[in-house]
Length: 226
Image 1 (tube, one colour):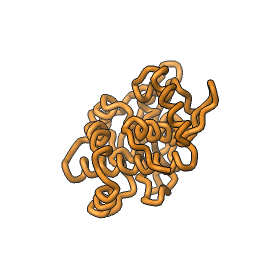
Image 2 (image 1 turned 30 degrees about the vertical axis):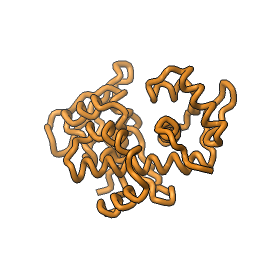
Image 3 (image 1 turned 180 degrees about the vertical axis):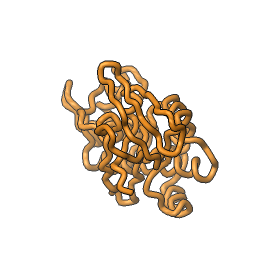
Image 4 (image 1 turned 60 degrees about the vertical axis):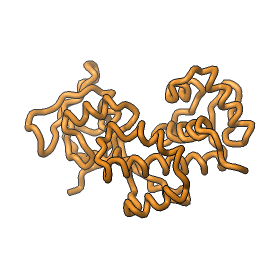
């Protein structure tokens, strides 16, 4: 089966895979439309084409799932995207809120050979600037047993290993707060009714930081063992 040739098909497959990476929720047409910032009717037609070509399965009014072949190509596009993001950040000095859109444009313009050589040049990195795992050439990737900051028990020391890259404004906000990958922090208080967490950041301003729960949901952490 030939690989998807249009940038739209490539984007659909990549986004479908991405929606399932950190969530168990089924991928629906409306969820895909929201992520792609397209009309639901446009996405519905696009999904029909992908299904006809064997990239996805989609029952009427049901969830969208990648076929094995669809997943293979989706992961390949994810690998491209995350390696380019890493190159932009590590070599060209882009901030983590700047790399996503650049990578979106560049990933469709380069060859598989370029991506393989880029990976070699970067030392075969395992994660991108946001902490997302970079798939290997064979499509495998290491699982990341991280939890969102919202779910951390009070007083538990944790370390930031991933931040959602879905919103550049959020990434800039986290930069202003001093949140970055590898940061050690501790949740001191949770106000569910007010929708806030009080967090102490290690090594920064000794004053606690108050953040909204939607922000905490974008921060993924693991227990600090050191």
